[in-house]
Length: 318
Image 1 (spheres, rainbow, N blue to C red):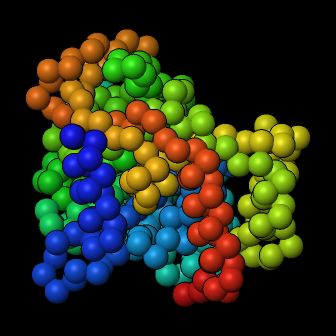
Image 2 (cartoon, rainbow, N blue to C red):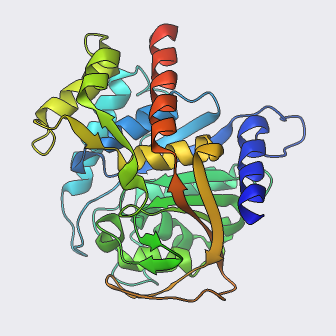
């Protein structure tokens, strides 16, 4: 029953927007926060979000991809690719793209201030409890958690959606990468009251895959961002020779966009002790939504349908 109610809630949200007077058909406000330089799937997920008429993308923010609490350059690599992607779509002048934190949080009480965290706060306050801002965390959730620590009053005005941290057969487990890159930030979010959607990586989004054959057929030679996506696959060392690629982050975007392609459950948030130690707490009053399964083939079909429509429509511009 809970799964049915969640599907209905997400479907109404995406079909009608939040219940804001006079804006029944308004698109859902979103920010995509991504460690874009770490992988290739971030680019595909960002483009999927930007191609969705159901979304009003208010910003694309950059995330680091290191566990270090000392300043490092990984966020600037993500920032550079975000700017290249927005340039290729003709959106660099119209979509804000502030840089994120250059390190992970030292503890759950200390924010890492950044333009991205301040931007999340600003856009959260542009709405209210009836017009919430969805923030997708495709990498470490430092910027999201830091925004909460800097301004706890945004708690009722945002929805956070994060990928990693495992959940299988009713049990929470540690994550693969994003989770470990800022476990203090994960703690902040689980211990907050923010409305929260969780996509497990190891057991769920791992099923979401695209083939190089399909990438070539749909994108190659189409110019602009489409050829940028092809080039990213072909030049990124870990994927250059792969014929099939897990699109971890695309699964999260698709699950929110197309609720019927995922199976959500509401469960008690776990107690996070450290990056490897997760305590089960099924009776926790802090409830969160977890996608425990996805229709990966359906998501892939929907992805290509949306991308084909965007290509047919022509260049997206300012």
